[in-house]
Image 1: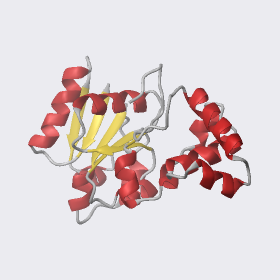
Image 2: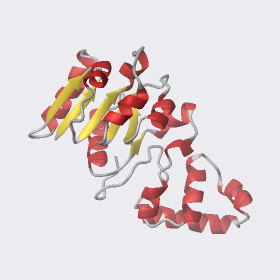
Image 3: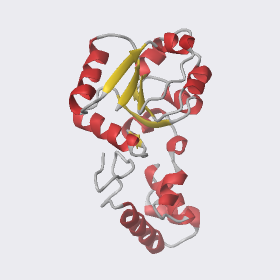
Image 4: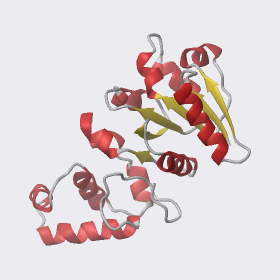
Length: 207
């Protein structure tokens, strides 16, 4: 695995890089300053890009549009709760994950695994603090899992916190019908409940 880490050279970043290199054989992580990366105009390809949201937040000259143009590989964004990462999602292509910068090691590594395998990983607990969940609702993935348009509609409302009664009222369907749809959604996604952290499932492992 060849990974790009965009951030500042500090103990936190070096620790994250060390975790990656010690857990993936034959891996290498290239650490680059975001502004310098943009200046270099590099088109090198990486297995995954990891962007430190703290570096984005503190950069005074970072051009998000130009940064997005230089990246053509899946990106994992490490953020803190007070950062404007909704803006990053809107302006940077290929973001496949947004997770807490201070998450535990197991979750961090599993997030990388999911993203490298084509999945998506988001910390909904962060997302619901400042943003509308529809910003990262990936219809293409849910369709590939066999969900119908109605099931995706219900899933989206569930993730936004709607109750069966509220969904029933909005869709003009009985609560029994809504409940049946929810059971089908859980079955198709291979999960037992709508978890607080909801990500793409890969080979029966949930990040």
